[in-house]
Length: 222
Image 1: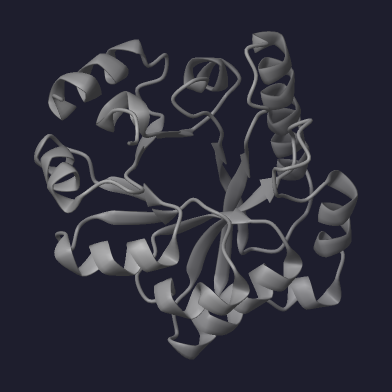
Image 2 (image 1 turned 90 degrees about the vertical axis):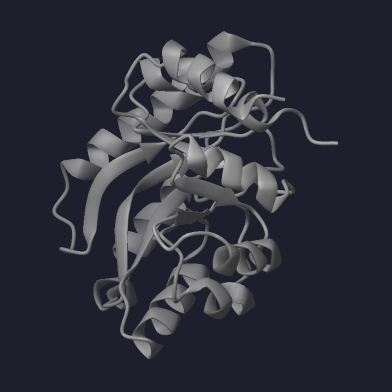
């Protein structure tokens, strides 16, 4: 497997070269991460806290670690000191815990709010009503150690590209609507993270600023 060739092939297809590529390195050995680092990857995505903790000290300090999986509140403290971005904030409870852990170490932790855009029930995330409830809650206004820098969503796992496009469009519409609101200063809304190995081109067409790609770079997981 040639990680450099795979990466070059993926980047050639990008419709937007400004779109950040997060290399999904979950379950992959450190040797693969090292190889990806050598060819220029600095943003790595992991979906398990334990794996993230184990890999972080073994890689160079300029690596940006992205927590891309479902994150349990009781595990936030383990990654709070170094995580670059938490992609899957899917409840107000989790956001409050991230704020609490950030406060303990005097660090503002960047996050994305995960929206439930797929028709599958298995995906995590806020629906529109839940998001509105959180944004109008007094506790939300008092958060001091998080920075919400955008939204994230995962499309339905389907061959139906029209459905995937519709779901990505709905996230982009929500993103633009949120940007038009008066929100606290810690809500900065710069990024819209959507798209993975199978649908990143559709995601880029619909305005994604960040894609999560694993198998197209590292090969299928065993």
